[in-house]
Image 1 (cartoon, rainbow, N blue to C red):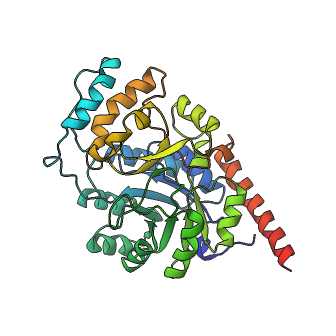
Image 2 (cartoon, rainbow, N blue to C red; image 1 turned 90 degrees about the horizontal axis):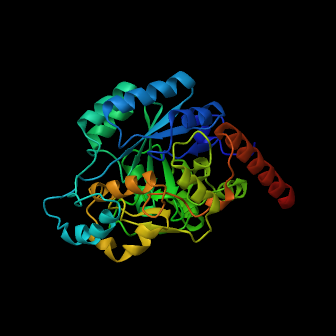
Length: 360
């Protein structure tokens, strides 16, 4: 196939395609299927406790002997004591009441940031790859990870972030365009920055760094994959496209919403977690839009939103559900992950071959 070998050689995979980690939706079954098809499967583990992480990695290793990726959030612990939750709690009160949920809880962090305990477990589990969102771990942690032979991937939403990741020791960089679903990986300057689209971001990141670059954001089919390689990317990372696989773990209403989604059906919001993340528009994102700047610091906003999210899903109503999605959801089709992986790469190769024939 007419693809760059830099990522496949670095990661020890056959195809330059990575399944995005998608914490909460990506399962061991999904990651294993992608791995066994020749790509790299990933697990978003930032919200898992030690027992959950050990169990999930055990399931993954029972289904594949291929390389896989564990993804962590690297963020500052939120200053909950210095945050005034009253405006957000007041706004949520009537919505809580509609589900009989009682008082709106106070902000709380659902899981610690990447710390010494998380580092120790990562070093013990020793995946082939560890990827990080919102920056990189400390220099000492990076030295420990690299000493174990673990390959590090960082996520950049600007060229400045890409340079910072390369300087910090990242072996490869995900260039995440604004079209991507889920959390923005922005970590320099204000979290609301990093809004460059994939088409503009990828070639500029390619020019800015020497390490391999992985294109991500709004890549929904073989055309997007081929275009990413034409821009110079060494690999692609797909998230929303893999959400439409039976191996994912997601509410039926979320899956239905993805299948019916239009290109303008998503919005970047802080209301679910406290950091900008692209989700499907619903009553929660639209009705409380004016309170975006009143959201608790990441990830403490999750404690305020979680009961409402859960109650909405339990009631079979999507109005308040957290439904991550990129802008190209309508391009994806329901099919097993292994079939999707091989089909997309085959079709992308065919398109690239045609382009080469034309250029000749």
